[in-house]
Image (cartoon, rainbow, N blue to C red; front, side):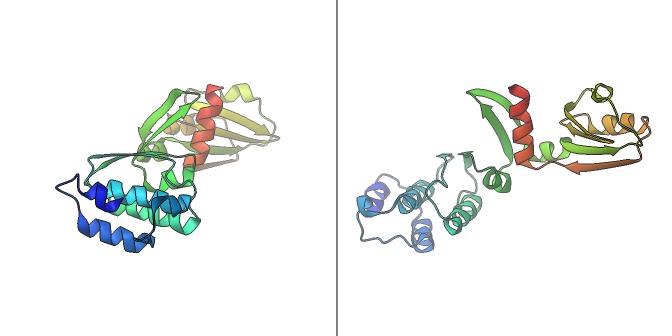
Length: 197
């Protein structure tokens, strides 16, 4: 399969082929149908990366791979795919968060978020407020707050934009404590999907 695919590309990168063949532990004398699902995934990636793609579309590339192989896959995407645009579709949010520059979230066939990951990390925050007495949730319906959760005298806000203004406004409410923490991509995903439902 490697020799067959190589014959179509004048700019085939033999060094990438050899490196990935060795790195993935692919047996060069075995037929494709005799490879495990994980090995076939690795072979597909080797074939794609060795032909200098400008665009690489990967749909759940980690499916069928063990954790060590997934780590190899992510490292390969960062190094061997340099210079290529990679569309990486995955339900494994931790994988996406480690290598993505831009994130799009699709829920029920509808694009619900599309932003640079660095912007999301900067804009999305969990704001936890402590008060001397119970607070009505309506008090915290502020532009940019996507979720309000009250638990006795503690109020937790999920802010997806307008964070500085929200924090300043909540300071005027005389909280005993304010804690602002960034959200991980998993939390952002869950908040975005919840908002759409």
